Amino acid sequence: MKNQYRHHFLLGRTNYMIILLGVAIMVLGYFLMIGGGATNPNEYPVDTLYGVRNTIIAPMLILIGLAVQVVAIFWGNKQAKIDHQEEDLYSHSDQESQLK
Image 1 (tube, one colour):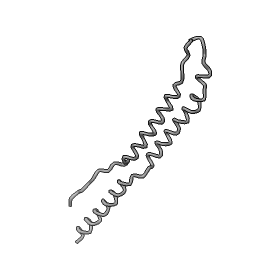
Image 2 (cartoon, rainbow, N blue to C red):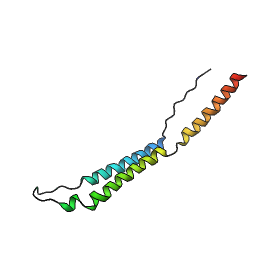
Image 3 (cartoon, rainbow, N blue to C red):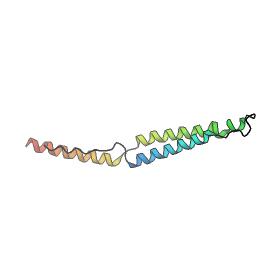
Image 4 (cartoon, helix red, strand yellow):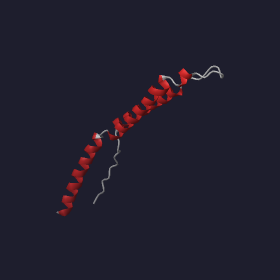
């Protein structure tokens, strides 16, 4: 009996591209969250620190990036499914030949 084990990646190229897209969106959100600093240490820039960009847009981008990560994990890998079906066909034909 010849063992024909072929290694298959769980995620395909499309999955990894979607993962990179999600990471890029999250990094953009973190950069937007950095915000601006004060030029004068005696002045507290309330508008800069608590503006719409830092409190709404940046966290939303981070959450969208996380959602994209979930989509990337659950995205179907068609090539792995095809290879798995072929592997099942070969294993069934090997079992039938051994029975004869």
